[in-house]
Amino acid sequence: MSGAELKGGDKAPTFDLLDQDGIRRSLADYVGKKILLYFYPKASTPGCTTQACSLRDAFAELQAMNVVVVGVSPDQPDALKKFAEEQSLNFVLLSDPEKKVAGSYGVAENKAVFGLISFGITRSSFLISEDGKIIDAWYKVKPDQTAPLAIECLKNLK
Picture 1: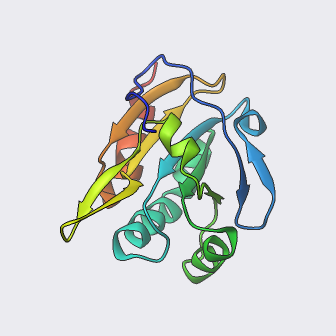
Picture 2 (picture 1 turned 45 degrees about the horizontal axis):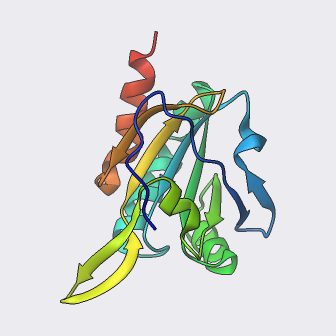
């Protein structure tokens, strides 16, 4: 199910998913803005909380660079809503329970956890241009590196 890794210049795969409020969101909703699209394994876990809070804290700086932050996980919208409220998140979280969008970005794969194989999400992030092209992609990113990597990339554009 996992696709090939994406790189700068590739067309960003489309998505059409429900957010934490049950609103349908698609890539087309963000035309004219850069998107920091990040994938994480599970809401309300330590690494995912670290990642989300670092993006929350960098939100103003990213917004000043015309970037919207969008998180994607296999969690259901109600779990995403609870996570967003508990952590005072100021950006959209999308529900991809079948991991189809994650697969199209090459971040859904079999993972071994405590000797058991499961189909999960590899923490990764993508900076997408205003016209829907990948600017940069970071696979297997550390939770606290999503925002700094994107900000550094944005500062080096043009």
